[in-house]
Length: 258
View 1 (cartoon, rainbow, N blue to C red):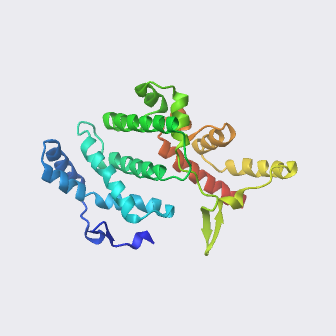
View 2: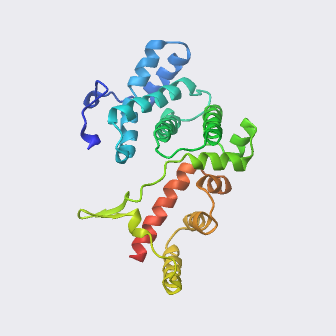
């Protein structure tokens, strides 16, 4: 398991320093004033944050050292672009920057090839997203990204969705006592109308156990075929929050059905 690896890129992870919020703020002030020593200390003091984030990607079977280096690039960008004038914790800003850098790396190494024009548009959109986040310290909407790069909202959404790494059919979605349930196990023949009718009843009952916002997300996502970015814009939260709520809702529904 990656999690148990002690040395990454020559760094002993058991000796990584943890900074307090006050220490981070003080170092950020010095960094913005041009103190390179404070900048280096701030980066080193947040390597544990990078380490915790790359654990989420351990199932991708990518070398731990590579993910750590890519995550550090995101951390450096967060340090250099952080705005002290806005009342936001550094970690709140740094986490999506680090995750975004890792996801970009994984997309670039994806075996599925996307057309050059779509990929270029997606990268322009991602660059605009980082700039908007740096300016406003929050997740921009697809419409804001589209306006910044002079493209239509629909084109931006399609491009960014196109470069999202696809889920493997053999990715585990539930495990218990050593037995795993994989995505492929959930695929079924849709030709049986009786089976679909019974499944629809079960789904409707399972959705009754969800909160109002979770039901809305599931309805928009799977019954109205909207993307996570479109849902995020419609209900006023980030795409990351939509993803987290969607996964939690699906897990609760799965337990109710089973």
